[in-house]
Amino acid sequence: MKYVLVTGGVVSGLGKGVTASSVGVLLKACGFRVTSIKIDPYLNTDAGTMSPFEHGEVFVLDDGGEVDLDLGNYERFLDIKLTRDNNITTGKIYQSVIEKERRGDYLGKTVQVVPHITDAIQAWIERVAQIPVDGKDGPADVCVIELGGTIGDIESMPFIEALGQFSYRVGSGNFCLIHVSLVPVLSVVGEPLSNIVNLHDVPNIWHIPLLLRDQKAHEAILKALNLQGVATEPNFKEWISRTKVHDKFHESVRIAMVGKYTGLSDAYLSVLKALLHASVAHNHKLIVDWVPAEDLEDGTFKENPDAHEAAWGLLKGANGILVPGGFGDRGVQGKILAAKFARENNVPFLGICLGMQIAVIEFARSILGLLDANSTEFDPEAKTPCVLFMPEGSKTHMGGTMRLGSRRTYFQVADCKSAKLYGNASFVDERHRHRYEVNPDMISQFESAGLSFVGKDETGRRMEIIELPGHPFFVGAQFHPEFKSRPGKPSPLFSGLISAACKMSRTVLPTSNGHAKLTNGIHNGHLSVNAHNGNGSKSPNGSINGVHTNGNGLHADGSF
Image (cartoon, rainbow, N blue to C red; front, side, top):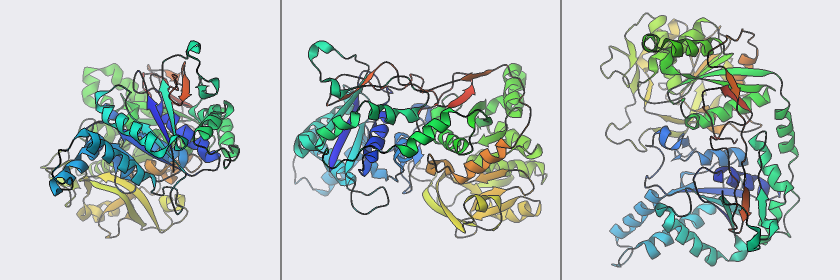
């Protein structure tokens, strides 16, 4: 096994994740099987209990692991399926060591950071690196490891020590260090030029692996890993084709994203990527209009009429509406209003997780006349609870207690839109993350009024997909289809939304917000191999590559 470690200096958020993912793509193009590990030095066991404002979206894996969003980047770039153990945290390491101490595994010794914590880190890396992630038998050839944070962080010190020991253990021919930093290259110190790579501004992030190839970064990495004799020339035919096509789009499709965390679009990173994958597949440039759900509500009309008018202008000017997942009651009424607008005006609509649930609530209130219909998440004493807390959930412990990971959905209607989008499959496996579900005792009422539950779990009592027959595209999914979307293989439901939205010829209403093009770039720096100073950074704002957004300072990490 060969190992490539990507570290960062000066400040966090320079582009280590993009660099690590791009290096993986480069090595894969050279004919090697690649796996990835992300190290997050925070004390949390996993990312599941952290607010999106703290750390961006929580990415969910097939095995139910709630992990850092960088693992989503790895999966999208490399088209692999990782496990929860591919995300190492300080919390996981200390928990495993303390459990061993309680069992007496250390034979009465004093348990210390060195050697016990550092040994546990190394053992974890070696074990996880052997797990196949590409659907083939046997371990990968190269494991790319990203160390989160920056060199010098107190919380990172045990990992830095462990990785330093690890590099000596595996040997110089099996370990390569890539450092990402804002520090300029200093010619007076005599650094080898072949190990310094300049990553300049690019139209979209899909150019980054090509920049690495063009500057022969792969040759420096292969030399450090003693792989020159077995590597092939990088094959980027499909990658180049996709990149060039994306840059030449003229027609655009406008999607209104109605959410709670619109102030930090990293909270919806996978949703943005899934929209991008689908729009590229349909040969359209993606425009995302961020609509704060609260601004659609009557309360905002009274307190801030300009914001209310702008939000409704964006919603009415969109070719499609998407309500993503979320938790809590803030902005729920605005999301319900967005679903109502889409339903009544035949605007393509996709609701994900909570987005599906609010579509059900809106239907209950507007069509069934159940004005007090609600979710027990927002009103525990709701008189008409059309969304309920799942019986297997925990109300005392938050972490890891939701319905998580890959679950199977069985199509109930063979010719429904969703089944057709999935290739007329009889079932589909998608990733979940929720505590609440549609009340199964109300399904007959809904279906009698015209709302079709076309996808259910194996018991037939847990609702997975809703559709509104006769509507151009009105679909809700309890699962998160965005987590399995890939470049060149977009999520079927996102593809359906974009396809329907592209057919809309509605007039875009002018708004006070305006629309500004944001592009992602790699700024002023270098990538350095073997710990030389340098930087491969992303935009300080992490702006969306190839995606336009309404000009309110919102952004997303610029990667697949």
